Amino acid sequence: VSAHPPTPPRSHAPEHASTGTYLKIAAVLCVVTALEFAVIYIRQLTPILTPLLIVMSVGKFALVVMYFMHLRYDARPLTLLFVAPLVLAIGIALALMTLPGDFLLFRR
Amino acid sequence: LSIRSIEPAVAVGGGHGHPSLQYHFDTLEQQKEASTLGMWLFLVTEIMFFGGLFTTYIVYRSSWPREFMAASSTLDWKLGAFNTAVLILSSLTMALSIWAAQVNRRKQVVLYLVATMILGLVFLGVKAVEYADKFEHHHVPGPEFVWSEGAHAEPLEGPQSEAPPLEDDFAKHVQVFFSLYFIMTGLHAVHMICGIGVLAFLLVPSWKGRYNSAYHNPLECTGLYWHFVDIVWIVIFTVVYLIP
Image (tube, rainbow over all chains, first blue to last red; front, top):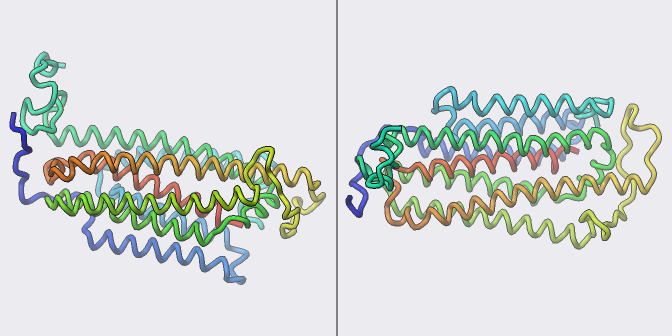
């Protein structure tokens, strides 16, 4: 057995996004974070603030999972493996929100 | 299992090809698929773990919206936003370290790993500043807890606006918010510390050039974990810091 790893092959098929895509995704994520910060100060958006923040958060979540965690490029079963319990967890949370008798998430 | 697969001579890789190929796999590709699937299964258990915490928070927030609104307003969302940007950048450097391994750039692998660790430490430092502020204002649940701000949250519309809670109850419910705040952010910080530890563990083999285009499973799996910790924070930031 050799003490050193063998010389790696020079060419290898890309499995993930390119570095350019990574940089763009990181920039978009930072911009959305800044928007989340900004909308809090816009009084006209107060009635829809909570759903707006949730939509932006879900967008950021999806971008990280699709590109940084490269689910977009991986086999479908892995996506199913990740999304199924996520849907289950969200469903349970929504169902339990009815416990107090009011559905208050979107109300201020 | 075949008899060949349990022979001691091939027990520590290298028996049939690449030195990093473990004895119970036939090819590096098969090994990579198995480890990736295992990592995703682990992340599924993490979803259920953090899912329980988020559910608890949401249920209590639905029950006591005034108290949670008042308590949430004491959090510094500027620091939260800064930490979100720091974690996003750390996810970028983590992804770039994997890319560097794929294109056989050994020094860049190490450089990006170190950058990821530094950004992780910056996140923890900011978190420590936030925690120090909570201790200073006696907002840590327990016998020393003090809620001097009073029940002054904005009035709500609908049934929740009726019968304002007593001052004592208000403080108790605010304490529940801070309990959940410390549990959620604390467990997230523990995950960050574990991630930084694993990154430190990967530095030496990275420097030795063990991770390259042919083999970089440990980097891939650590990257998945690190990005998952990032998305957990993205949700915490929105749910705990931003939603009024």
